[in-house]
Length: 145
Ligand code: RB5
Image (cartoon, rainbow, N blue to C red):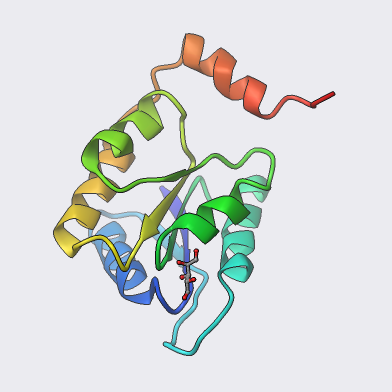
C-alpha cells in the first residue's frame, strides 16, 4: 500500500519507527517530513498528509506529534479524511472496523515503541466491517444544514 507519513518535531522519533516498520512490511512510504528536530508546526504536516489522501496519492496516512491531538484535529478538518487518535490496541482495531479510519494519529510522547508498533500493525491489518458502519461514515462527510 501507498502510505503517507508526517510528523512534527515531537513526533519525529515515532515517525522514524513508523516509516521503518511500514517499509519492512513492504509498503511504499511517502515520508512528508519533518526530517529534523527543529521546532515546526504540526498543521503543516497534517495538511500535507490529508492532501495526499484526498488526491489519491496515498491510500492511508500516519501522523505523529507529541500527543496526536493537534494532528488529528487538523486532519479531520478535511472532508474525506477520517483520522483516528489511537492510544491502545482496542481502539486501533475499532478505528478500522467501525470508522474505516484512513489516517492514524499517534502521540509519540506518550506511546512506548512496542505499543506504537502493535497499534500500527492492528490498524493496518483490521478490515472495515461495512454494513451499518458504512452508512454512518458516509454521514460524517455529508453536507450539513
Ligand atoms: C509540540 O510541542 C506539541 O504541541 C505537538 O506535538 C502536539 O502534541 C500538538 O497537538
